Image (cartoon, rainbow, N blue to C red; front, side, top):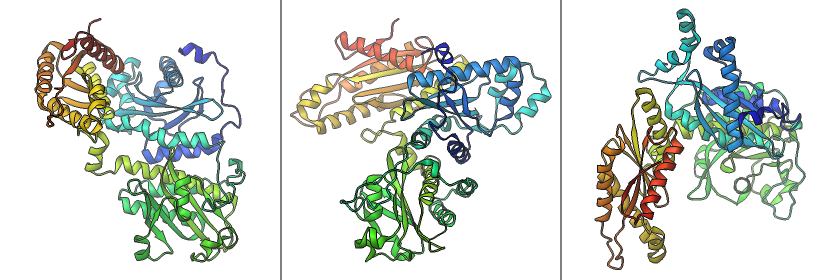
Length: 540
């Protein structure tokens, strides 16, 4: 899909009422505040639906310039067009050298909207905005004092952070957008198998007063300690809901149970030991089904739980905390201080709160995780090598470095020969052992500065910074020979592993990351066709 095709469509294709833009505006502002990145929403024609309330000095000033305004319009049209056409997230560097990303979202009715975020400079070694800022705006001929005013207050961000942001948006904003017109909630306990899930409630019933949501995210955004985050979330939620009791339960995926991380109105010593198996009791059923539960009168609706409950009013809400389709926890509130039962408006307002809670928890997973978790997030669990995502992040960095310094680098695409036959013959356990041995052989044969990743299945990639294709051949041969010399532990495994290696250099063989990987991959397949167990350069 080219840019002209997108621009020829009718403007504002997202129909009035297709999604509630006011609800999205508040969610967008809250999410932008939590991750500290400006966000906007565009329709698939490239028209802005909800602009960010945070526009930096560079964007403001450049758009006042006729050339700059045209550059901005063309750039955003191109970025949105590509997101719509590919249905994939992208990271870009615009004409002012600011980094931004696009995340397309397919709505239930088939329309596409695009979340655009960023407009940030990558920080230099000193943590400040550097040469990219001056290079980006030099074409517009601004006076020195104007440039200095523009620079003041600009935000910079680590490159790795901007690369991880699209996934955060995909996990949190996309489900919210999809659910704005199709929100389904249960007003009957899902623990009672004989009861039917009743009709859905419309978003239009959601109560106003989003100052409360702003209050929530302002309260939890500065919290860095994980336990304090849990406590702050629950305290603020119960306060806004007017509830005297509540609990925040988090999901343990490996053990398949929920444990209480924060509680109000419940004995602390007792609550710490509570573990609810997923699928059992009310909270466990909420987690299993991923559907909110509202009970107005526990004595009537689920009398079997009324006997063991300590509710004062018999009315409560149990809300799943979801990131995309994945349930990460459950938020419960009960006993309104007024003595009233929870209403439909309370339920929908609680769902809005839950979205912000999920955002805060996911933000914690990305920005507050320990070094151990950070390592897990970027490594392959079987081989211990870097994973596909981290490899692509490093490629992005190397491409920018090579462009900036007119340098080069080389990558290998490596595939184990006849691995499928080996795996099918001797089983997956033997196959996993072979993957580990080959991984170790590759890692041992490269230099300390080289990056080795398991890209998927039996395929490995290697990044060699500051290295051209001729220089890289020695290392590729060393890897091939190292793998060829491996010997399986079991006498039943007679086959010795071999590999086929494809080499491609940036920028000689490609101008983009995907093109570079594809060309190295073509070289690898050429090696296969030539008899395997060899190293082949990419040739145009």
